[in-house]
Figure 1 (tube, rainbow, N blue to C red):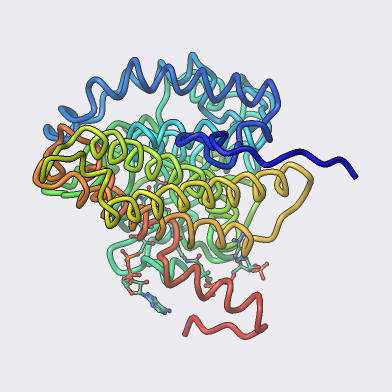
Figure 2: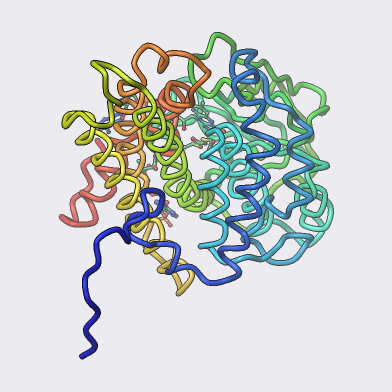
Length: 395
Ligand code: TGC
Ligand code: FAD
């Protein structure tokens, strides 16, 4: 057995457990590329976007040029990376802002994935290359005003009329709705829930943006209204019938979120650490007070643990099929921990922490949405509860 001496001073405040060493060259390259992109294009502007409640559509094309859209899918202009590489990209994007990561999740995992997995060859050829390049923006309409955690109770319906389909209903809280060129809309048909590709300018299809949000302000969130929307026979995704269609897309997006939350937490921890070393109170840097050191350590531990969980689940997903409950573990724990880190960082920053000069309160507010969307914290508890007891407790 080899024996290496223990040496104090090797722990890096920014990578305490040396997790970097667990990544291969290609993964580090992806991480560093997205980190540079976020430093150049997101961080200098995001406070203004957040304040103005604005998401710059052109960012989508730049993300497309970097290969970030549908990046873990194969073919049709997609990059075909590993799941770990996709996760690392989500982590770096959410270090910038949850809005940037949300855009990528919705584009790649929720809009491109169902077309890629369940679409006809013609649908894939028609939509995926433009979506991979960011020329075309997609959104995913599952939730309704009265059907959130229980999407199976949706009221949006699709009925056949000759060879056409006619859709009626509405969808609520839809990320990127107002900037989208197409929506993947889930509706109840006679045979079960089906997915439809609805081009933006189809008559009867209207989109209303939701205002006065205090969270995910640098992201567009909208209502989709479908009033006798007539679609041709080839608008339906032929490959899936039933709730498992949209739920399988959620697995992909939730996977990205469990990485993204670590990025948001890291941004908050690093901002608090820097601030605490420079901020002098009672004649000393606040980093020299025991109570502050404890808070810095709690944040650092949460970031490192979150990263290990994300990397472990990523390696599992790269090895082969993984249970949705494994993804729930990461979404449940990494998001709640990130929210705690953001709140702690906000406190260490004192009054400065309530402004957009520092990232903590922006991430804190964003993470409230992340805690709720893609399955609330309670829903993920119940998914894992069912996995360990065999008893569903949703109703
Ligand atoms: P249940 O009876 O359990 O299942 C129905 C069918 O679906 C299958 N299934 C899954 N398949 C793939 N992946 C999963 N994760 C699956 N979970 C279930 C299941 O095997 C069954 O198949 P079959 O063949 O037997 O028909 O369904 P349920 O109605 O009891 O619901 C279960 C529950 C509560 C877990 C589910 O409804 C749920 O996950 N609810 C949460 C809804 C949610 O997460 N919505 C997210 C909307 S999208 C969003 O928030 C985007 S945020 C944007 C961003 O990321 O920025
Ligand atoms: P509800 O389901 O009404 O839940 C309210 C509370 O009740 C929660 O605390 C919940 O955990 C709890 N609860 C519900 N059922 C149970 C239960 N069985 N046991 C215990 N507690 C329970 N949806 C999309 O389809 N596409 C999108 O692109 C999209 N983007 C979004 C972007 C943002 C910014 C936000 C905030 C939401 C977005 N959503 C999107 C919707 C999101 O998925 C839903 O908000 C989420 O699924 C929860 O539904 P709800 O808000 O109706 O809450």
